[in-house]
Length: 592
Image (cartoon, rainbow, N blue to C red; front, side, top):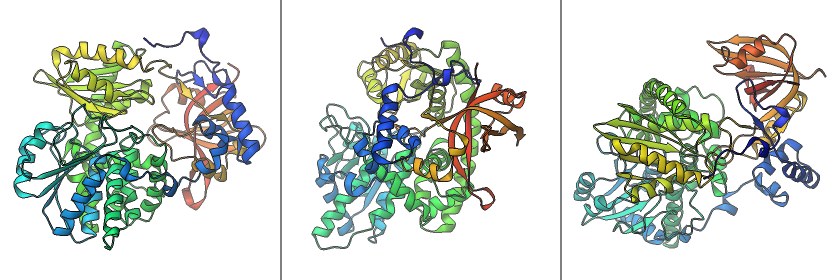
């Protein structure tokens, strides 16, 4: 069983910070990483900070310049490398061309909503429409169910299941007499339902090379193949490049790792989104007060939660309807409703999060898994709360809501630990009533009296993959940086190494041995700080909800002491001026 390393085996703390003001140990690049980044500087002429970021992400020196400009032309895989791809695309093309009745059965999260919107866009571009069906999270649960599929089959010639269906044996069998195509990315079992086609890079008989794709990206590949078939038949094709905003949103919101083709999909999708051509995303950006060009952060933490809110605490199809809306007025009405539901979701989440964190802390945060279960916890927020526990502890986390002796839960994993496979194994062993998902996120249903045994077994399985091998509060830093070097131009060059997110975290920098020039409270509980290195350069930073924290109080009462500051650097456009600001995450007294 893998556990935390003994203290005498741990690498030296970065800048000597064993315990910061937030109680964390700082870690940084090892000697070999530093040597590789220095060699990259010499070979490429790139900034040292950029080379540190690239080296930390495993980019070789000869790949550096190409990595900074990811293109779909070079990275997009051949769709036909996936099993059943030709069959699925041909059936969708045939149904579109013949004017057949098509139903889209979509999961209720961002990935499902974006996948459905992609198909609706593609069909409408050719004068066709489809029935959208999104199951209710509470009444119907995840994925196709026999009642819904039977009803859809009675009124449609083709049912396309997106972001679901790979394990829906009974439900797909209930659609007898109607063709069913599944486009998914969740882990498959050794056998598959009897659908016409199942396109899924995580089928057991696939190589797994494309297992990092979200469902929307798989749908995009199906549409690439569908367009190829249309061109071969001499027909016009919809513009798929303008649909990449949906793929980017789903990729980030579904915590797919930003590696390989995913980087190109998100990079190009953000450019499309910046054009504000999609009414639904434009309306969501406006209600969220997003006044700048979107970044991967905005997809994951601003737009994604609002799209998800309908499936979590409102009507399940609101997100997909908003993303696929063509009329700006309809899109704004849907966005307003989603924004309202998101506020409601936050209130529910706060109560569950506080209770779950207290329970997890009482159980201990040093093991390979953190988990919590509570009576009446809303099933629509347990996944978000699991993500919060994961972020706070650097461990896979599972949060379970209990009702009537049965628990329904969601889990979130850390990089390098396949949670979906472990949960699927628990289901096969009989410890769960059902369970499945993908590497980074999974769902489960379990009898209440078996939760302790199931979580103990899950922790054991995850430990074998390395969960819990790092400190729960370690803060990874990419490099030291001086205030005078933090320019808008440097930030732009660093952002070219993105997009940043799952599997490629946004780089954090340390500003060593700086003087606090000004520190004050802004807003309800935010900390605003200015600092300098004594050489004339100064920088501003902000830490949200930190004024009353140990970090805020130490900086406010600095008394002339010098500090190491750590966080992410970003460009602020306040007042029409560009300037770099530190998103302050942690600090430590210099020389302590």
